[in-house]
Image (cartoon, rainbow, N blue to C red; front, side, top):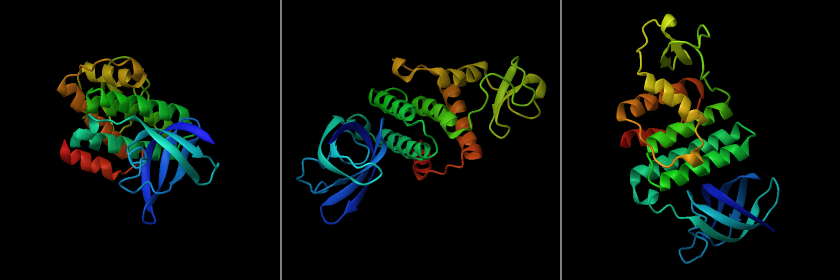
Length: 241
């Protein structure tokens, strides 16, 4: 018997009334759990085992095999997020992104911590674009494609950083500029801050729209160029924004 907190990444129908869920946990990675009868509307475990659910699970654990649900209770229902289609879309994207990141990294504990902290801040009503970008930047390290946050990607200079270029893979200093668009110094500063910030410590977010949208645009381009991840939830999210 094992008690564990986790987030439901996906669910697969099994028979008429059961389902199999994949749950991201901090200490055991992704656990597949058979939930007998949990698809039924009257089953008490239907809600805590739903996709995008953050719950406490009591399971008959089998390592590298399908575990069996004994009981489950919701930790956080994400009422705010799930009442807003845009916020739900952000949550769905972050969930799909996290599912892909855990497949490419052994650092499950930190991935789990970063993910849970981010979605709890999303539920607190903080800016979803900024929270998403913070997590995206932190995930780049787990994916092995984090750009150098301190120097020009071309010459290595730490002085006079002028812009960020997704195609060239990072910061460009004033001496190495060709035809790149120079960004406000706040953009350079905030990108570094996004990476180094402790998500737990964020109480409020004050980033102007120009800076926020510029960073979001660059990260979209960088992810397309360097991660190889193509997520349906991201395409849907872009249509809503």
